[in-house]
Image (cartoon, rainbow over all chains, first blue to last red; front, top):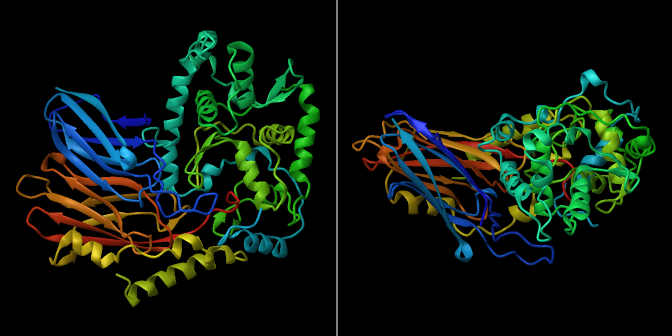
Length: 106
Length: 263
Length: 161
């Protein structure tokens, strides 16, 4: 399992614009870089990130070799009701990981 | 080791040698000491300052998990003896390297972690620069953020500290440079496009963008030696610990900032 | 994308930087040769056309923030925001970011929803070389808006050798 760091407020008032910040530990090997033996290292990147709130997709990113190692993405959402965000990263070599975080809106 | 194609080093360092005056090797006065953080652009400073976005925090989170994980031997975890790291480890990293009475030599923080594993946990030492050793060391050092570096006043360390100072001041390598030529005499000026920092170890293990991950002070010293076209020491060599000791004296009382981010 | 105008602007910026570096200019002129010489998988124009089709792309409404002087091309902070109320009637659908000189022209593409509150995203990118970065926003009315920014990529001294 890759280490992830997900930061968003635990509580918010209805109508607040909240910032959601995500980091995941991943080498993001570009597929363009030679290894120690001179051969090109195979590409190994996260290609897609999806954030859902209560099963509805609210944000999606397509990533390319031009993403830095340990991909960082931040975006916003308007808090309207309490619920659970899920975060899914997918990538090369069958990489897939999902994490979640709850918010209380009152 | 042959230079990498496109490496800027030979040209930049030759320019340094040709254009700059001979070394005076005067250490930076305590009041003038400043962290390499000050030389970075606002984007990288922001990356370090905010724990939500600092990529070094990924390893610190790994370290927090290792702190409470019991070794396979069934002996206690780190937390089993030391308890809460936030209180038990507060200030510890600021006092390393320190004298180890059992082996009668100075040890740095990563050696201390490994000694604990061997002696108290019946576990194999972790390899230098391995993710687990970096993570545990970073987790421990992070508990001392903001604590001024305060090398122990221990006469048993004097010989190694003097050796570190001599290593820092002495010219070595094919370019005939010393650490002091850059970091004592020419800090604040530029080597290529990069501002030369005073070279204080305030944030190790740190996340270096060049490494795309966390690395130790020994790895940084190894990079410096390679840049000077000098033969690097092996990881764990007493010479590195001696340099770390001198660097801690030279950096005091700057506060620790692990996990730092540097270009 | 690589018009003569762009090249001239970059040249001026680089001279300004070099003027500030006194006797040690040689290092800045040298760049990561391996990355820069790799063949491109696709042109930037072609990647942008795959994103926007034949629609006109107008400058404006998009703000692109990246450091003008990059200390290490491995990790470059990038932020994009677009003027938009982000309502169901009027919002940003997608933002595409494109480079000129990496081996592949796409940097990142994000898909936004009206409930986002703001069209504002940040990430960290790789830049193989000094180049111009372009962000293009696709609005819910089908129009496309863009902003570009130049970044000079330098190298840290004393790299791992």
